[in-house]
Length: 603
Image (cartoon, rainbow, N blue to C red; front, side, top):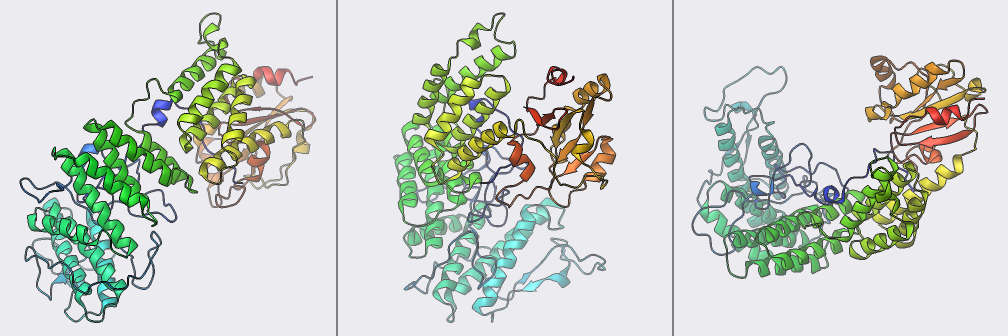
């Protein structure tokens, strides 16, 4: 099983449960579906690659507004959405299961005449190639004319499919500010023109006499995107057509098209809720149940839309309906094999709900009590923390498991167990590991892997004590390095990585100990960086004077790092202490003063 090396810390339950922030796109119906402008940053295999979370580009829930579920009248919504398309005809989109769709009608919704370019409209790609001499530019967009691609009337279905992919790449560049157009008005004008071209290409692909059923599905998905964007640009008729289009194809045999249509309809229902439409909350839940209840694959885009639905229901105090959406999220995504998906599902499902009085909040309070007492913060006699018995703790854990068995719960318990080890509460650590084993370790999903990893790491930490350590590994400097050369000395062995500079914050304490006992204490590190990392350069820049073994981590391997696995290292900070005979005597992951541990070993 993979043993991941990561920064591990226990955070309050309220923090863990309120991380469901999502990247929002101001040109999309639900703010997450558009291939052009919302990028899924964590790269999940088998999931929508065009929607997700981003720590660098987060938008608040108020950043998106959705169209009404009724016929559109009044102010236009601020944002509409498209959905992802395969990037190449003949190469299935890796983020969705591709299927053919027999017996589809050859026609599609008739496009409006709003913003429709002529049949020989040109497609412009902003910017120029490195070293290219600037040529004539379009006066409105300042885009070099010679780089325009033409949308000709005689394109084949394959060429139209390729053109849709080209348009998506252009829209993505425009929305991310990477198009070379610096003037915001010019960029908006260019986006409007490109979307119009996409609509024309999609309609042609639907209507082309040589198009297959799969081609027409692709065209309809492209048309749905184009209508969404045009509606966001103020096209009232496009918004009306978008709703009609989504209703028409919500039950289409094509799973991709049907899912896209249902997500759009959920977006309309969310906006109906915001506008105070009667029974809008019931329609949101009904549409979500239809989407999740169907025997079809759903990706992270659906997860994000459901999260937005849940947030809006909570905002308007429809707690029961929001709870139903939360249950749908956890049922569909909570047991995902992919840890990132399962974690995101738990975060999105739980965010916004009050944690006051919940089982997880009570457990976190107990954690703070025993940790505070162990660290001298629980009162003069530590009574607040010492009152937390193993029996009391086990009962509280059982309540948490009964209320919420998701990935966040498993990660929280694994972190607490580690923290209990750090502060010397072995009874609480043992009770927590028992709960992980009994409740989660047999599961064949991300939660099960978290439990098994925590249990195996603890087993390895216990097993390595008393063992000699003399690895056959190269050194960071390239010079020979053998632990046998340090026999007779106590060795302080920090595990570290350039990716986690804080893994070396223990160095002042280690150096002080070595200075106090020269000739009796040595520092020998273990570097855990991946292949290709400039470790030697980091050592030189940071003035690291002690030698280190180079144990290369392989993120895709069954065991990410053999040395870290052997030591049960699941967190950086991590320091091993070897006695004068080269045996592992103590493992520390608290970052605290190790003087007492060393002095106990010095003869």
